[in-house]
Amino acid sequence: MEAPGAISLQLGVNALCALKLHLPLGLPTPSSDPLGGGETYLSRAWTTSPSVPVRVVASVRRLHPLPATMQRAGSMMSHLGSCLQALPSALRRSLSSAQDVLRRTPLYDFHLAHGGKMVAFAGWNLPVQYRDSHVDSHLHTRRHCSLFDVSHMLQTKIFGHDRVKLMESLVVGDIAELKPNQGTLSLFTNEAGGILDDLIVTNTSEGHLYVVSNAGCWEKDLTLMQDKVRELQNMGNDVGLEVMDNALLALQGPTAAQVLQAGVADDLRKLPFMTSAVMEVFGVSGCRVTRCGYTGEDGVEISVLAAEAVRLATALLENPEVKLAGLAARDSLRLEAGLCLYGNDIDEHTTPVEGSLSWTLGKRRRAAMDFPGASVIVPQLKGKVQRRRVGLMCEGAPVRAHNPILSTEGTVLGAVTSGCPSPCLKKNVAMGYVPYEYSQPGTLLLVEVRRKQQMAMVSKMPFVPTNYYILK
Image (tube, rainbow, N blue to C red; front, side, top):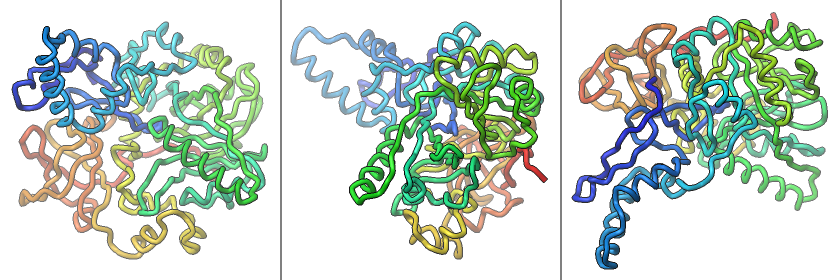
């Protein structure tokens, strides 16, 4: 990845297309993740970030000062409006909110002090990388462990006797079957079967559901849950929602458990993948430690009081195994692991079956067909969907989102949704959608990069084997 800097994007094709917006190189897209959800970055491409720094608007004003007469001003604004209407809708939204103040996590000053290169992401100011290169951070995570700040994620508590009823009215997973302190990846879906967001739901032993969803869908997810809470409350159900203001730190990599064990009394060997416990961590009490992450490696996510976040991060960094890592490494790590980025690889127009996420559908829920979009999704399980998300191993130049996918005869079949050079494999990897008949591993295809066609092969995912800690 290239270091953040200024690039110019030529807008439109008419006389006013001399207008240029100066955007930070490496600016990420709004979808996250990140379980993190999901995060990615752009390089010399349209930005789809929901927050563009104020300097963008200032740059536009400097390049195009208001004309002397009102007539010329009116003409300029008319042309500018037409030009902006020709932009991608996500960029128009970015410009409209360009002066919004970016939110900061409790670790913002900590990032700056450690050389973090900050960028706008989903309305937050977050580090895309630190002093180490993106590739070095990626490889360190695979070989040792890295600390990521994912405090921008939406953390909520769902409580009350009918908390499971509420959650199962919104997601495809079997929440009722979760044991105490067990969690699952699930999906919010709409009545058309589309994915509204991906999230992790944990059934805590403290009597509430702990939910983590993507920062890019913060307002949408919160509104969805709050509306359902009010609906059920009006029907006499016992349910409530609380938004948590905790920080969230992800310690990821093969030595993460070893590093963390030195600071906790609990035996982490008894905390397998997708389970959770509240414990004291390096002297910081009340931390919820969940054995999960979005890198494909063993690791944990630690929900900690905002006021204690810097103290905890500092304690973790005292171990030489641990280095800080940012959005860039998080994106390439999740792609190697075959994990989706919401807004790129899955969205409201993608069903779980099309997105190769059928495993998130609980068996009981499939039989009952009682989740949003079940009438669309369940029949897809038994038949062939028109398209499927697949992995691609590609030759030639790096493959990026929106690159066309073609048959070997040159027919356009679909498009890449995520792609990057794999630091571990030293090959180009990508995800994208193709018709069902082209989705079998080993199928030869073409991808078009800068108007040149290069070979690609449908590949099983994950591209790099995952190392989740599973009890045998």
